[in-house]
Length: 297
Ligand code: NAD
Image 1 (cartoon, protein in one colour):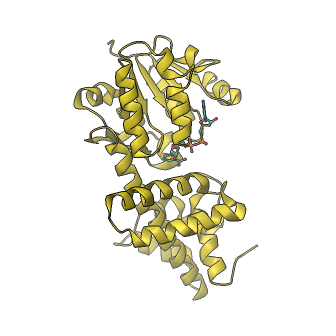
Image 2 (cartoon, rainbow, N blue to C red):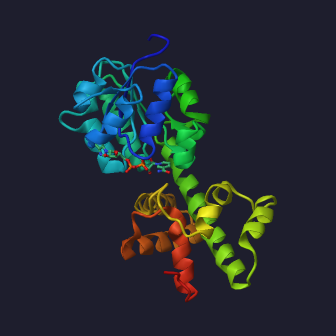
């Protein structure tokens, strides 16, 4: 493989578009496809190559990256009749960076192997800001040789690529990540509503909290927007609902209890049921306000 393999990138949403743009900036040839032609045009305007189909995007690519919403989307893109597996060059390395079920990650890896393709699961954490700033944390499942081959690409996209185990392990670690993030947002939201009820200056309050043991990336990245009730995504509630289903199901399968996580999963699900699936996950604050009888208009 040449030092800079050509890359096919499928799925140019909130995360995929800035990630693909960073690969272009780093000198890779990136050919991209998304169901939305506007998104493909946005990448082309930044130096990427536009493709009209998955087949066109993956033709001749050494590495194929997918960044789509959910497990059925990954199955459709990889296993579909005119999908990646049907069109990728033999020996290509497929890197799914979407957040999906660990069992589906294992399944697509096995299906890929039957066709002479290698598959890594490599979900990310760090949000839209992490994607734009190339500071994603990347948790990888697969074998060492494939991880080493993909590492230069991961190092363009983020600061912390780590091989965490065999196929599916990346998704399992990501499920734990989503458990921690949801719980953290919920508690920051509760603290904020609590402080406001006591008439405390929440800008000063969050600043000092963030300097101590209570501090978190959630507080740093989302505290001000939560104070201002600005909930444009970022990371959509609908996607975090998907992830809470993944982690609660995987925990039950493993026979372990995640009682706080299961509780927060109910709040995430309730927000989605209320029609707020398109808001940022920091909108968990709305639930705290509702329960406290003080939701703002
Ligand atoms: P998004 O909805 O903004 O983007 C998904 C993109 O995939 C869209 O542009 C859509 O058109 C495209 N797509 C869907 N099906 C397709 C198909 N069959 N063929 C081609 N393109 C297709 O989602 P996002 O926020 O970018 O998230 C993508 C993945 O990354 C999800 O699994 C999510 O859980 C995960 N993730 C998101 C964040 C975040 O902060 N947004 C952070 C970490 C991980």
